[in-house]
Image 1 (cartoon, rainbow, N blue to C red):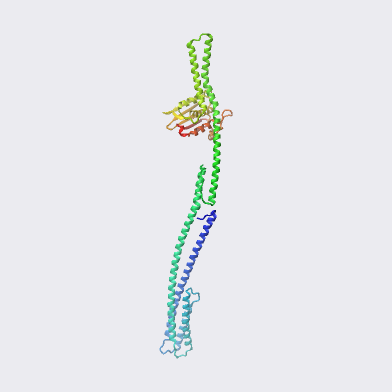
Image 2: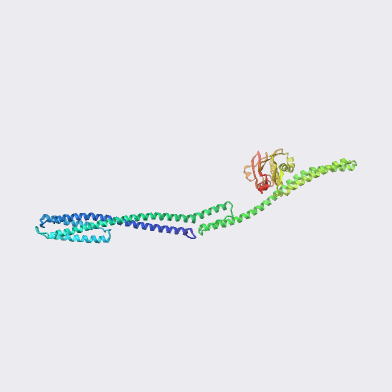
Length: 499
């Protein structure tokens, strides 16, 4: 293969070689065709000369008959007849010589010229003798001159036949040679085209194909892939440019991924801090009830002690109530702290009823204040899942809280959990005002909210989407303005397998 650093030079050399081969083949073919034309002209010329030689022999035979009388005496009629035959022989000899160039061999032309001259000399000598004779004179030596000329005509006829045979043989050789050249031309042209095809295939097509495949892999996100093209031409330079671009894209992508991870962590922290207010309100509502019982028992016990009628059984009842409500408050704070700590790496088996109880406990005050009924249902034979309970609680709290914010007073919210073999499905449906179609694609974007200022941060649904996707789940929303919205979540039962 040609080692050029430019495709233009490479194809220029191929083009020049192709032109040279074509010119050489054309010159060879033209040379053989010209030779065939010359040989054909020789065949035609020798054929003409053969016919003329036959005519000459016929004229000489007539002349021989005219001068072949025994007494060798010529009368006026014989003399006129002999002169006519002499003129005829001279005319035929002129036709034999011809006006155009003879394409025959030089040796043949020289032989013809000698024979022609010898015959002409004999016939002209006979003509002079006939012209000088008087009527009744004897024509001495006339027959010898005619016989001599006739002999030369026979030699000339044999010579033309031999030359014609040689011309036919040369023409056949030329035809065979031309046929061989044409076959070789086809073979060489096919071989040349094959070589050009291989050069284009290995020098252009394959490097470009490798470049295309590499570019497609880089375009699909495999920025670590590099294109390996060994040529030093424009394709090789283009592959180097692609590799440099891929390196820059990889560096940019790594920087973006680092920034996205950092921003995602900040977003999660912000979202969880926003949820802490909701958690705090739930904690306050849950703890207020046991604290009220403790306070009431303590005040009643104090009044009885002051009046001096505190019986031992009454004191024990009050103390038992205080202990029970204190333990209840402790359980509530322990449960809420576990939710607030959010330790995502720790998965543990949990019953989904417990998760729903926690969600209902956190949101009970909000739902009661708004007069909203939460209809809960957990469906499945085995309700145990291996998850991070706090994160699932946070998902459900945000979905139910969002449904409550979208619902009117006295509305109804459906919370359904359906457990299958490897997955469990969540469905939260409300009959609120719904989501406009143009906002459906943005409901999971951070800080996007349709609520009035001060009523929402736009982080709840975004946090839900992040948590669901981080565990290999999917979330979908269906909504129609004026009818309500339904959020559907699919999550694996074992989060450790998706971690």
